[in-house]
Length: 302
Image 1: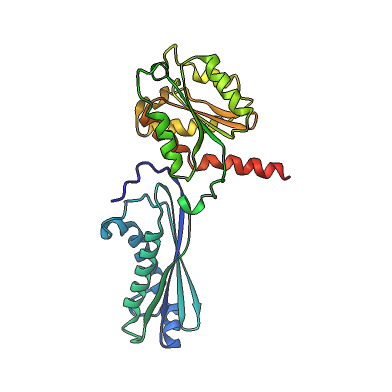
Image 2: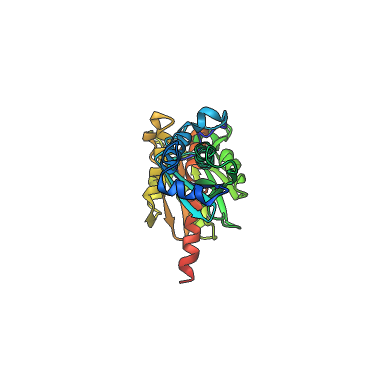
């Protein structure tokens, strides 16, 4: 199966359709009046659809097991045509469009099976996805031409005693969203040096400043203190979301002291110094964090 461990849970909704066409008006009357010999067609087919939605991963090899949290089946009769709409909802890492289409198709097949003794001309058609929400389908366009800077805070790397991997990981992750850093620096774990570099960027129009390193518990880890003194509008949810995401994967993620917020018009985000920690923060925050720039742009035009 496709690896979805880096994805985050979001509300996922899918609506699918299937159409059953009968050949006689008497068949429609039998369905509506519940006189079909095999039983109540709509209710039996609905129950079958519920089961099909839940059993989808058992039948499709690459389909992930999903906690289905809502399923609904609705029917619409138009002449000799019965339109089936099936809605599935979940809060999970991947979508439910396959479950919705599978459920709609089984509803239609159940109706076909129940109606064939009284109508030899029953047909099934138009099984398709009508709508999906959540995940990629809800992502807003990534703002273009963002001026981005990346800072690595590390005594050892600044002294030439190590190789930076975390800063490069940030830039690698940015590239997946067709973004790139206009500036990249390595500084020691020194509060004043960190602040001077941030101020240089904020004063020259950088919109997004991503900082890795110095968010741990040692006395040399001063990045949160340095950044907090420059932030005039904190956004607690950013660091909270990243820590929550990391906590589901690594228990020690709760020890990160990362902070985030605006310094002037520049969004400053601090991240752990480990490559794995940086990768988790980027996966947790992007591209959703970029929505702040759309909000800012909208506010400027009000």
